[in-house]
Image 1 (spheres, rainbow, N blue to C red):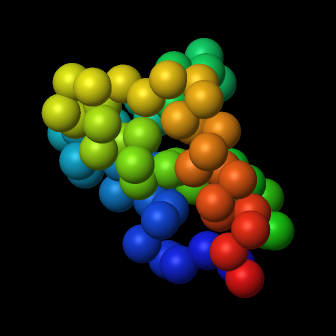
Image 2 (cartoon, one colour; image 1 turned 90 degrees about the vertical axis):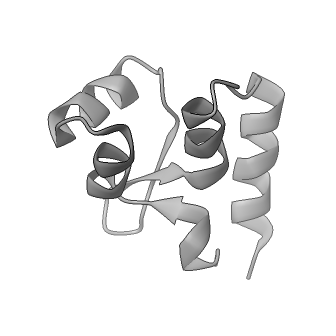
Length: 75
């Protein structure tokens, strides 16, 4: 399992971008922001991707996949 600091809740992402939570949900639906689902079905967002977007440096698809692979392999 991944470390808790690797994933962010929608509320945390919303606070970081200073937007409403439904904006984060919309970004995920529109695939502007990558989300992964917890075993309970809750979306979580990749901290590395969010940090990059906040700095104005979006991740490439390959970088997002590498982050996802890291989360999947961490036990």
